Amino acid sequence: MNILLQADSTLFLGRFHPLAVHLPIGFLLFAGILFVLSLFKSYGFLLRALPIVLLLGAISAVVSVILGLFLSDEGGYPESTLFWHQWIGISVAIISILSWIWIQGWFTKKVQNEDKKPISNHANIEHRIHENKKNIGWLLGLLVILISITGHLGGNLTHGEDYLFAYAPPFIQDLLIEEEAAVSQFEFPADPDSTLLFGHVIEPILNQKCASCHDENTKKGGLLLTTHEGLLLGGDNGPVLENGSPKSSELFKRVSMDPASRKFMPPRGTPMSYTEITLLNYWITAGMPMDLTVTDERIPEEIQVLLQQGYALTTKKKPFYEKAIVTPASEETLSSLRSQGYKIETLAEGNNFLQVQSKDTLTAAKMEALLAIKEQITWLDLGNSGLKDEWLSSIGKFTNLTRLNLDNNAITDAGIIHLAKFDYLESLNLHSTSVSNTGLKALASQKSLKRIYLWNTKVTRELADSLQKENPALEIDLGVTLSGK
Image (tube, rainbow, N blue to C red):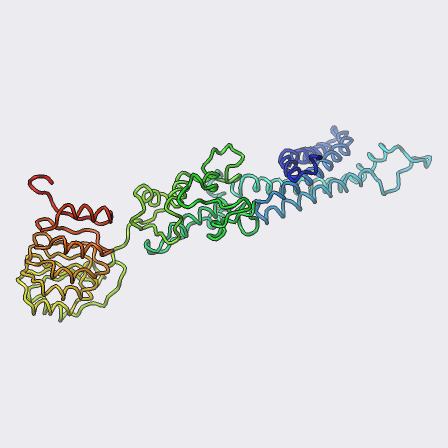
């Protein structure tokens, strides 16, 4: 079969467009230079070369346009830039051809000499050039302007929109690429807990680095990378992501391979940085979750560091009491409780949550009185206060607790069951109590709980180790025994 009839032959020829396009640029600019020099009397003879130079420019412009049309079929170019590059290039070819035809005088009457005989074709062309020197100058000026514009647009298509001005002085960058920079900025929610690893970090990275070839307008290879659905669907050759396996994911292989490879992505513009590739690698390895936030405790420390340094993101969850809002407790209620032996302070200025500590021995009445500020209490210290099991049911009503200290009290598993239903409790101190394995099992199921202090209790290290293996995010502190075990 003739190679020109094969499916990829036009794409093969199209790849020569960046090479061929230098010929019309060179010839037409050279024609402009010849014209400028011919304005000086001593160089007037240079105009004689104008027709052949213009012809070569026109022919090479036509060839470049044809190859460019072949190359555009490959896809993967910004639609607007390609449109103007293509049609300005076609205009250059048409104007070059028409200019050469006009100078040749194909459709005009030939000049005659004094004997009314037609002069030679060569003399006729020279006469026409000299008679229309001003108009030729305007035409060549227009061609130079057009070829400069389409050449610049072609450079943008090949190297990226900001290639020419990437290292320009700051004031030039601000003037010429400010809009592009603004588009590429990442936008994060004010609350770090709402910042999604994919939606706010990975997806914008793909939009920046892959959209020029794989957005709604281009979809090179049938692949759309600017939406989650398109990313999972893949392209003409199948899926580009393998859940849990970056090395088997075609997309990851393309962005992380040797940039010299013809399969490297992106083929134009700035490639993905080490940080971007590492984040993509982690996201695929983690199972490509859509709801994973940057503050999720499953994210390893090295990824958190990249998010902090590369995007100035906070990767630690805000405590509940910094996000939630409660009404302030009345001063009358607080005064009454302080008179009963409670030390009460606000967590911070402008925050209505309270930290409460019992300074005296508790009674049932005092515990009941504390319920008046159950919504505002988030840190509660009742250590060494004579607390009893039957009073723990009242503590179970303090739904906004994040820290609870009950050390050195005669409480047992019977009371502990009232502490197993908190939504926000992160730290629980039960050292020097009578809590056993039964109580610990009841507590360990709380998802919010991060630390339990249980030294000098009946809890065994075997159970503690077993529970920590099941839930690595939960720290169970049994202290250090004299034997070091």
